[in-house]
Structures are given as C-alpha cells and as structure tokens.
Image (cartoon, rainbow, N blue to C red; front, side, top):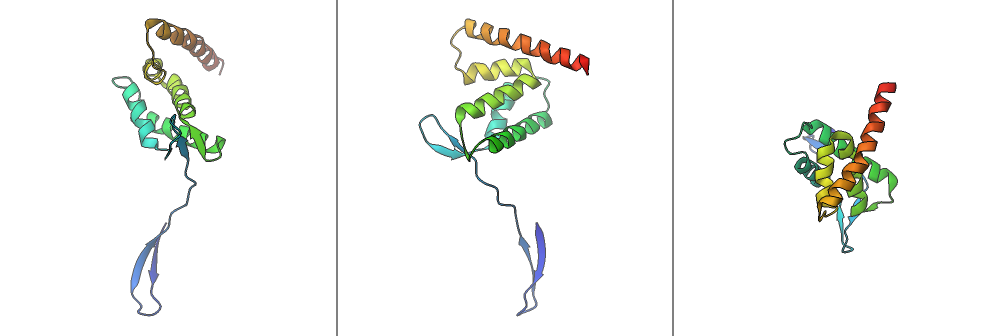
Length: 137
C-alpha cells in the first residue's frame, strides 16, 4: 500500500510503502537444510517440463501459485522437498501428460524404460476418469 504523508514539523510531503507480512514457508531439503520456498524455482521446473508443449505461461503461473497456497495452508511453516515435488507432479498431470512424465522422470530419477511404462500406466486411468467426469458435467 502506498501512502502520501506530511511531516508535522517541516510540512514536507513524502511517500511511505506498506506491505502485508506473510509467514515464510520453508522447504526442508534432503540433507536437512532449510531454504525459503521459491515459487519462481517451481515455475522454472514446470517450464522445463513443458518445453515445446501446448501449456501457456499463465496456466503454469496459476499452478505454481496453487502449489504455494496449498503447501502454506497444509503446513506449519515447513514442507519437505517431496511434498513440493508431489504437488508439482499433481498439477502437471492435470495440465499435460507429457510434461508430467518429463518432470516425473527427472524428479523420481528414472533409470530404465520400465519406470516410464509404470508411470504412463498409472496416468492413463487417471486421465480417463477425468475425461468421463467432464462428459457428465
């Protein structure tokens, strides 16, 4: 919030800025270290997964915002990296199945084609359920 004020002693006008203080969401790394949640870092990972895919930047920004909001609502100020990664995978599965598989392959450190097959098998029923829900509406 921006406010124009006036000094009572000298009558000079000046501007002050106020902002809402939000609690800091910390991400607990695998090595036990902690760092502030960075929405731009999440967005960068999602952008990499969606490279040359038909997903707009606006959709990815909205997803990153949902991830941050959900993690903040469901935690006591700290979340693990697995919680962040799982939320990203959930959002990408809704946006684009190829981006989801790309992200999952890096996030879960796939080592062979069997892991790709397994995740695609699990994704297929989920996509069919969502498509049938959309038809009912």
